[in-house]
Amino acid sequence: MSEEQKLSANEYLKVESNYLRGTLAEELADDSTGGISEGSAQMVKFHGCYVQDDRDLRANRRKHKLEKAYSFLMRVRLPGGVVTPKQWLQMDWISENFANNTLKLTTRQAFQLHGVIKSQLKRTVQEMDKVALDCIAACGDVNRNVMCNPNPHLSKSHAEMVQQAKDISEHLLPQGGAYHEIFLDQEKVISSEEVVEPIYGKTYLPRKFKIAIVIPPSNDCDIHANDLSFIAIQDGDKIIGYNIAVGGGMGMTHGVETTYPRLADIIGFCTPEQVVDVAEKVILVQRDFGNRCDRKMSRVKYTIDSRSTEWFVEKLNEYLGYEIAPVRPYEFTTNGDNFGWHEDETGNWHLNLFIQGGRVVDSPAFPVKTGLREIAKVLKGEFRLTANQNLAISNIPADQKAEIEAILDKYNILKSHERSALRLFSIACVSLPTCGLALAEAERYLPELITELEEVVEECGLRHDAITIRMTGCPNGCGRPFLAEIGFVGRGPGRYNLYLGGGHAGQRLNKLYRQDILGKDAKEVLKPIIEDYAKNRQDGERFGDFVIRAGYVEATVNGLDFHKNIKPEAFPS
Image 1 (cartoon, rainbow, N blue to C red):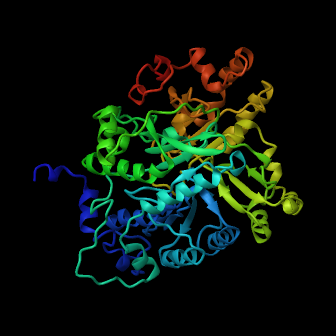
Image 2 (cartoon, rainbow, N blue to C red):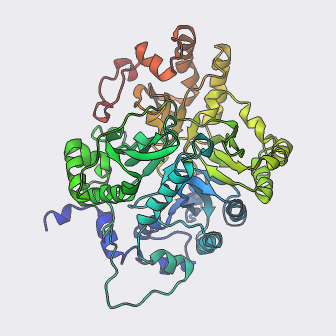
Image 3 (cartoon, one colour):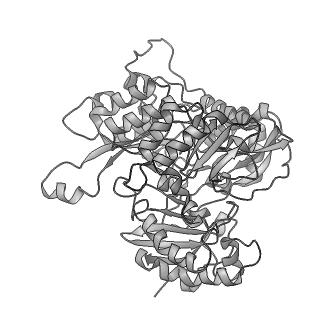
């Protein structure tokens, strides 16, 4: 009992929720408030929704003694990020009728809707269901959306990899009927037998779980940021198996050095037939041994570091009933998207588009949302969301390429590629005004900051040199800032920690360079470093590698060293 009393409050909520039902149905029907109780706010995450409010309006509403301007973020499950034209059109329509008229493309290859009010939540889910889309397990203490490389032109094996992502996602879905009962009004099946979650049990996982699949040399899904990843190993155009990576994760807490981002460990190799089994057994090890007392320490990375990688492999082999094979050779060269037109071996075309901040919205210069709607009306291929908040229009038949190009030209969409490489390799989380965890701006501010930095890169002749730059409003790491060559992490209104030295291919963490700088000072802080890079870099040397060689920061590969070896000048007096 003494051990049980140490469990986090969420563990009791899950046990008492009747497999994620709780009082959600009753509270969603209550029109006396735009919000729901704290317990139900935890439960609704398992069904792909977060309770939020417009923080821009908080003070004024408080002054007038009004309830917060509550709304819901809804995240759609899209294994592999593949979307049919019909699904795109439906999501576009939903965004206009039930959300804030925008679609957010996330860093996990999923759609997010923002601004959905409680009275429209069920209707929104039902409209998604009409085109076979859902929010099941898009959030919560379960496996989240399974990502994979979105570029089919890279390999004939791409379809096989997408299918692996779908198979893993389906296998690891919660089996209870709560989602369908609450949101789709399906009747609960009456049975004398207790409902059982065969993989998760009553308490599900200690915390969220993320999976990705990639084909080298592209690491666009940032495998080192995921709890579990599979790295495809090919013989010619055939996938012969996957290297297994475990224990990656980005989140940490400011001022708590026991929390840190961590790179995944590459622990072994499995065959394509073993992938789903391996995914399940890694989940089971984490279910049984993850920290359920302190949610800050509950991810797989801490389960591994509190014991050892060797222990984890031994336990995984025990759960599998066989041993995973030794790691196979592979190499990553980038974790960004390859923009522009690409033709595959079948003669089909694929177009990778830059979507700033992942926000699909019309602006006077770039009416992207309208243009993509018009493309979806005629497209014979499909859309693929990327892990970098961008979009690929894929499998365009050769005889339709001119038609698609005409629409792109009409709506000025390809002009988005006439940006600096710095902007094209940028990521920003949503942050303010809706995220309750945000300490500073991100999506609304990073484009402005990049405009300032573009003056420097233009002067230095670096317009076409890719440098990964990422900004998040807090240290939870939704935009994978700790893998960026330049990373900004919110500390407070207008204030950020500046990190430098991440690996361009996502293979190295960055290091704190300056704590608590004002965003308005970022250009002056970075300008001499960028100028130094332009003058003194070696042939082919990436920015993240240069700042380490030049002594600006120390290299960080082990998450346990993330808070170590920081130079004294990082902390201004």
